[in-house]
Image (cartoon, rainbow, N blue to C red; front, side, top):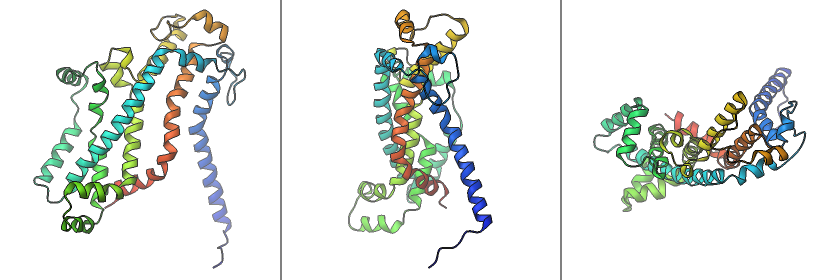
Length: 304
């Protein structure tokens, strides 16, 4: 069978399509390249401007200073442990919830789904949430970073829709052979649901890794604040210093200003460095889940 020759219109369409996609990709990628160049450039030299793609005065001092700060190391480990625990726990618990809701024989199934859906539409707000966490005695503890992030009805709906598309004959034949519901879920449903599981894991992992709000408002101990919260404080303090010229701030005042001046480290350069440090782990993980991402979203959201 011969290869179909592309017409002039097809070639024009492909050229325009690839050009637009390339422009969109560069637009999304350029901010990261810009931050990366500034993070490897001398801070005081960067204040002159004119850096777009590559460092002009290369240095590793920004990263040395960043990792010499004990708060960033501790916050990094808090974020890593929190992300791993919440991603695994939330994905598994959401799958269990979705599997139960997908069973046609579940008593009161319609009312249970309505209950979850209705309570998802409304939020009590910051003050009732604060009071709830206080009554649960999880304020200013590690658990406030984990427990509230384990549940998401939106993710459960995506999984439920995916489970509804799995042929019933597979689970029915397993039950005839004596398999329990847990065995059906663990040995049949989960192996067939890797695309949607990876998609939900990516949703949860990225959301938890980038969550600065919880650590900002529900945790006062600096040794329990995640990296995203620490980064947000760094950005706020650097912006305040650039406007006022002051040198205050809990994250920056601990640094030796004379040493920073000698090494060319500035608050703005540190801010760019922290952005790269926080973003790099997600960029490294994403390619391993990308092959499941599109398939999981399409099948889980658009089936039926």
